[in-house]
Length: 179
Length: 257
Image 1 (tube, rainbow over the protein chains, first blue to last red):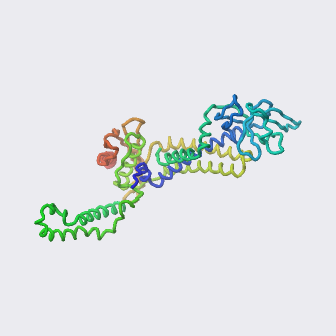
Image 2 (tube, chains in turn red, orange; image 1 turned 120 degrees about the horizontal axis):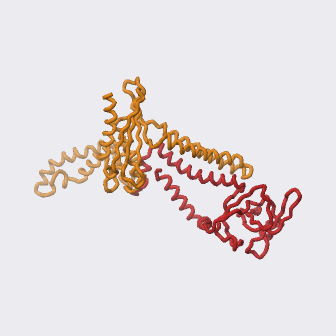
Image 3 (cartoon, chains in turn blue, cyan; image 1 turned 60 degrees about the vertical axis):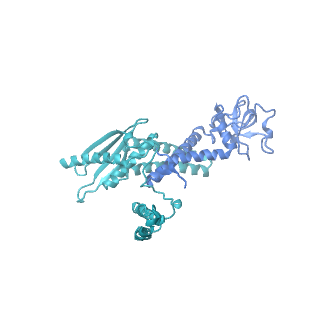
């Protein structure tokens, strides 16, 4: 017979206390969600924090660095700036530097990017027949970074079982523990 | 209802034990000498029948291994004695139990319901933001998202104010109905505090008279070592008299007045 002593506290709770435990868990998840959405609104970018996955921007950014992005409409994109963009058809955004820009009178731009550590520009990565990127592909511009912290995210993505185990244990802890 | 089932289990269990023990160890030392067996056997037989009666009358108990009862109201409270919040919670719950069961007061859930409502509304805002953003991808959903985020944090602020000023550390509001049915209810409030890494537990009982709206309070501060044994089990025999004493001191004052 399993002796689930750690559940004893839960078994003694009445309905309201059980509901409060569930709400507690919900509020922690909601707080994280609201902070993320809040950052999205403030920065204007749909992914305000990204992790560098490859070494194509060394020595500026290494694999595992965390980047903070903003995507304000009023900031113009200029040559030499580091942008994070998404290629149509691919879901993982890429962080590279702007190499060339074509700009029209009305402000419409087309630009070409290249990773600092790459030998060639990104035309090989773009969609078939696409030679330039446009403003709509941009996820944001890098404004600041924190080194190494993103390694945790990379680990969690490479070993999804680890991620689910951590999340499950955290969830269980919050649900069972009072206050 | 749970108590009756346990009683039935206990007597059924003991009946089963002496019935299964057989003539050899029923009674006292009948197995000691083989010479006495025959005579003792005759006196043991009626005892066997009597002892096995409870087993027949009570419904058969399920085997122990399948007994997965969820509610454990009768099990003595055992917690990790070094975990401050578990200690405080168990003391609070037991005080609540004493007041509700011994004195038969009725719990008023108003304060708790208020807190649950605020939390539910906050989670509701979060869910709305999540669903809206999923249905209308980011740049279009900006105003709705901004609204939800601000509302969420406002609700968090309201929750903090509510817990600090309205609820304070009250964990029980109980009503005592007037026996004559004419006067409004008397209200008893329990609140407690236990500082982090400290062993002094303070329990405060507040009495608010229904008729005169006067408020009286009494409290005690004791070390938690007085109520828990070394394995972390709460000893109700030491705790309950304290609560009763606190309660009676307030009740007696009322009678004197």
